[in-house]
Image (tube, rainbow, N blue to C red; front, side):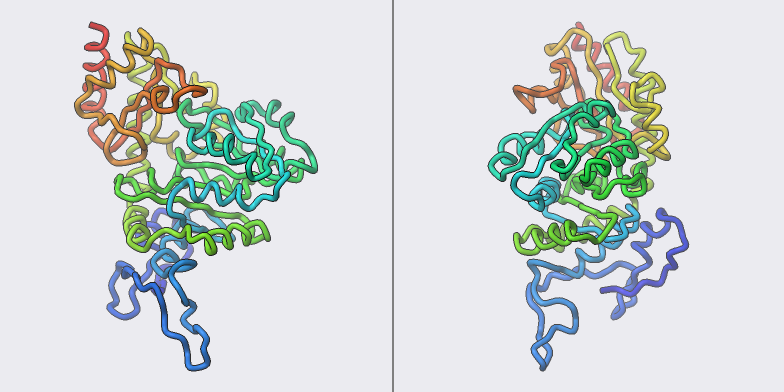
Length: 388
């Protein structure tokens, strides 16, 4: 591990920019080295005084990135890196016991929702899906004494619904359950769920945390080092779900510029949303940063420095017009994923298939760091071309 020369009194932005001020103790380099060894020398007494024995459960480069993530999330118990966001999320559900009850949102990452529907019952979990943005519905869905986990995603992909984290935490804790928050679309720059009462926070590190569309990763961070967190740690160690050192190294590189990217991308998203809501070929813009958005008031309370980098538009003319719009862009890229420095556009109903909450006229937009005027001009031309 590298030594740390930066006092903790500085801001999270400053600490992230310097990767906690870590300095390589051998070369004095300001960038932590990449550790790729899979096995380590035992001491003469057969112990491991270095703290490392084998690469499947642990890695020094991974630890470096985890320390920065824990700092960003203000996670007292620390953070864990996984090989993907799905690996991180399913580790949480894997730590539950057969017979446990789970409440999850109707609007959430579609692959995890599908996993809960298909794999949850096979693992003995009872899962109910609810409108998590409706506090009353969420309260009615929990079963005191049986619900063990309330999982929310805010803003919720791809409708960008907003759930009140403090209220959800009170509901979960009142029923004897934990609250876990998928905060992928917010990033710790804009929302820190653990400070709002959540027990766990999850990210697809593939998205804005890495931000360069070249790493697949998942993150979990915890407020308390309790037996449930220990169980998640054991699941990662025994199952070999740890992130690889090369990916952790690249993720660390990206975390150092996270505040710059997240701020720019959120500003771009708000500018686009503001211009698109008056577009003649856009029926509706879904973005919590707009004052008229149903989730705006809650988002304004629990998000800071912006409302995230994701928005969706509903295109006048229905599904055919939406697909034609996505086909006509040039600067925007038609691709799955989000949070990268390049702006992406996608017709989500086609991707998610039957049962999707996405209206067929919806296009999901991930705002990158390009010139906002160029992004608007490209989308404006595509919308007009799609409408003849």
